[in-house]
Length: 197
Length: 212
Image 1: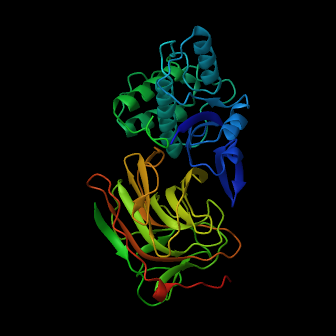
Image 2: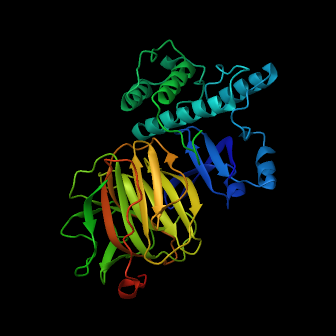
Image 3: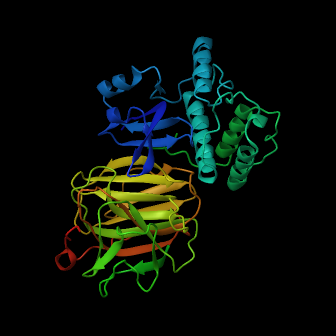
């Protein structure tokens, strides 16, 4: 089996009185075994799909807001141009991206994004609502978040047992999220998206 | 892995399902799990429901299992199943659930976090009358078994860290029917292994209900 990983927006609607969150292109994915990692309450997700057909893959990747990782996740980014495109793309979607180098593998990128998703999921269970709106972006200082959101970050870090030295007002949300993701990975916590990444 | 709670549902009819108050229904109203002829049915296919066993203190790492004899006429995402890490606050919509769709031969793993629903995955099975569906969580790893076999690989989700185990129902809204039996819930003190099948005695308990 081949597992393909896509990063794409989510859409939200109301079903049976609940807010439902699903991948934007879920209709293309219907019929394939797939797993979704939400990015907390942010409007993006990671989707792992088993044995997607070339036609469905093309339907997905023809959309500018879908990014597909190479099936061989151990492929390195390779060029400065690709590195810059990845940095820009991830930061547009409010994931930490500036850390990526030409020698970085897509597995390393997928693991950092996945760990950010796990951190954001735990945060969402404590405090609903997105971090990023208006002028607050991943590049903003942590102090741009509300006091309640800042406390939510700390409570989330505590729930995972993470060191919180980096969580300071003058640090960027990007640097804090990247650090949280690094700690998630260093702790050996699982990252299974239709198989480990 | 050990069993902390179980209910074979072999007793007089109950509406709602109670077992002397050991079951708590999350949402009030008419769509309660009911006990009819020694099996659990859904009284009204209008709204989703969960019910958790309140007679034990649930560890964070837990599992829930129930035999299903009837899960017909549901679309993907809907049907009966089991819940874990269900918030023990009534009307609080936080839980993981695995529900079975008989006619589509599918299991859906989903989460409800603060009332926001997300399908984590949908995977294929071959529905067998009376086979158990099993859902466990250990740390941030979710595992689903059906009929004693793993349904795909484990999945990571970090949303919910505590709660109770019990039953789940995702309504179709067209009068669909279910029949559940032999529920068990427990803790995980050793590496995850599939629970032993609690096979269903279909000839005695298979039953449909009229939707009111």
